[in-house]
Image (cartoon, rainbow over all chains, first blue to last red; front, side, top):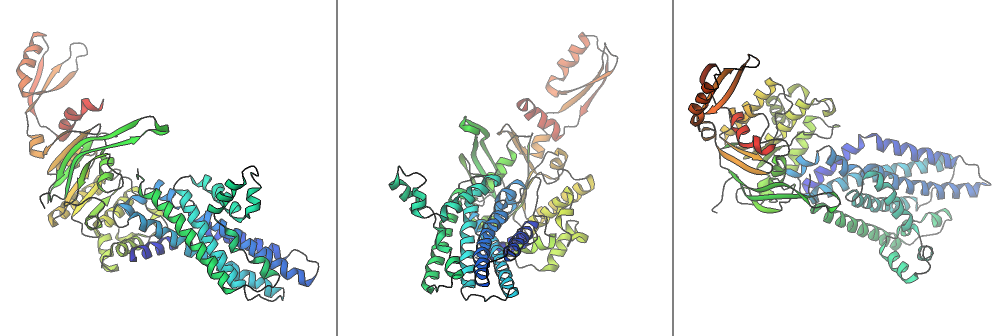
Length: 251
Length: 292
């Protein structure tokens, strides 16, 4: 695992030096500042508004970070031939995949924590209380971000980066849908649609922005189950990616 | 174990599927050769002959369609043998946000090597990058990237160096330095498998050569065998049409009959002399017809 750890650090350093990360962070911050400056009807609503849309902004930020950081990693390594010296000698394919994933996941998590701190500062600036569940909610978004990251990795082995963006975004949108909303796409085959929805990811489990904004308490066991689900799905997507990568010729 | 050559390729074939499933392209066909311990073996062929495909197969980057590859008796997938290989890819590139020192440190850590910054500085000095150790690779020329590749390949004191066009795009001085390092590594005990278009390099440093054309082996042998076969003669005659000198290279066996035919045609023979055979002559006569 030392090899994977070193390669993760190498990936982390590489991504932190790229402009993509900083560009996406600036976009998220501008969105948060924009949300907080929207005029509200009364003080009670403003806090809810900032929390609700702020967490939504961080979640969309997780998607942007996943796509911006990872959609081009493997294709770029292949195109520039920097993949060959890595795979020819020090790394096995699974080590390459995990190293790249963990490096990107660490950068993504750090970026999301920074945006959460930004949201806290905005709440403090408006003299609004910071809910106790804000950090756990961010943790759930981080796990959702890892799931999205693993999806981006999977698609990067079967699609070009420009195609990866719509595919991952589509999966992200579908994963937010409830079963009834999904069945509504093709109401003539409800059984089939329910089965497909069952197989597709349920990213709605990571959304606790509404209960937080309305001040409802969330059971700790919910967090544990949601995190476990997210990590299992990410591991599943990475296994699929590895299965594709293993059988592939590096031309 | 009966088969302990550093590299043994047996009946290797590699086919690539064409786009849209329309058949396949045969890149390498029924190729067999070996690199013995302590040898420098040149791997020669025209563009598209299958050299890089063969190298990628022996590094486990491509899966052979048929045949087998053994590295000290193990398959290329074995971690044990990969740790003993140093590899320079054709047109190497690296993430250009790093410096050579950072790259060497990270590669060392990934390979479990025990060297420190001092030893990497020494290595960078050896390949001619001593004053560039902390400069971002994005500022490097093609030749400097080749040197960087060489440093990474030599980092683990490999037992087998696999070099894919390592001197392509280098100036004559840098090529000479590269050759000297390869010879030094060979003296240290490393076997070398060198794919190159620059036949003078192969002729200068290789003990043996394998010549490939259209994915097939056309000839192989020691330099002595390849260069010291049949003697060649150079005949210089004056063209009746243009009055210019025309040169012909003729094998010894055909020499007398060719002179007779030139005399019959009343063509003035200016000179008949023994021609020194070069690897280029061998390559052109072995693979020239095949590549057309």
